[in-house]
Image 1 (cartoon, rainbow, N blue to C red):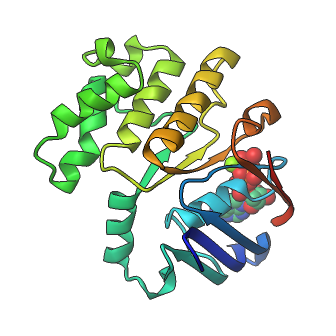
Image 2 (image 1 turned 45 degrees about the vertical axis):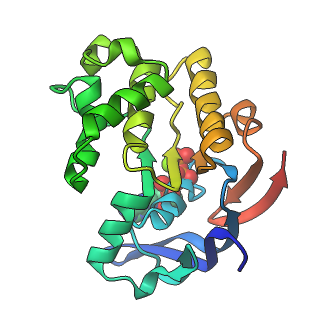
Amino acid sequence: MGNSIIITRNLRKIYKMGKIEFSALNGVDLEIEEGEFVAIMGSSGSGKTTLLNMIGLLDFPTSGKIFLDNTDVATMDEQQCTSYRLKKIGFVFQFFNLLNELTGAENVMLPGMIKGNSNSREKALELLQLVGLKERAGHKPSELSGGQQQRVSIARALINDPRLILADEPTANLDSNSAMQVVNLLRKLRNEQNQTIVMVTHELELGKLADRIIWLKDGMVIKDEIN
Ligand SMILES: Nc1ncnc2c1ncn2[C@@H]1O[C@H](COP(=O)(O)OP(=O)(O)OP(=O)(O)O)[C@@H](O)[C@H]1O
Ligand SMILES: [Mg+2]
């Protein structure tokens, strides 16, 4: 299996709504190497978020296998999944999901505090510097632009030194300049910290900044291309 950090084998997800079933993933086979920056693309409803949620242990497949760090996640109990999510994965969402009552620095610190890190504040300030927002550490989300809020949320995703960053349309609510900045920041994390990044995007121009684009259609991989 080499140093693949993510492997999926014949991954399927069927959503059940009462008597109606919808098959959102139809046998996805993927291997993502440590340190790769991968974009997932495909039209609305093609299964991108579903796939990311499975990889992020936020939801579970109907059948098929997921290996993270060569561990079959089906063998992990709920506590092990939670712990893996908290320690090894950083999530970046489309709507930032920052807490409005907290400052930027406090938002970044929060997952570190939950994990019990004592030096979270110091680390949060370092990360805000990394994303170019040290001067804004005391600002609340409402006092930041969309692009700045997303960079705070990326700093937050990094607080526990994750090996994997999962970003679901992190630029969907940003103007094109801010979007470019955010994706370039993700590239920098891959280059400088060897982080593995999986980013869902609808913008081909942004997908081209990744190392590789995996295209989904109707819950299947239809193309997997190196940029
Ligand atoms: N909880 C759910 N219950 C039922 N069907 C769902 C559920 N979540 C997603 N689906 C369906 O599964 C399919 C894939 O959804 P998914 O959210 O993965 O698409 P996506 O590629 O992320 O789309 P978008 O680009 O619009 O975000 C869609 O047809 C959607 O309607
Ligand atoms: Mg989606």
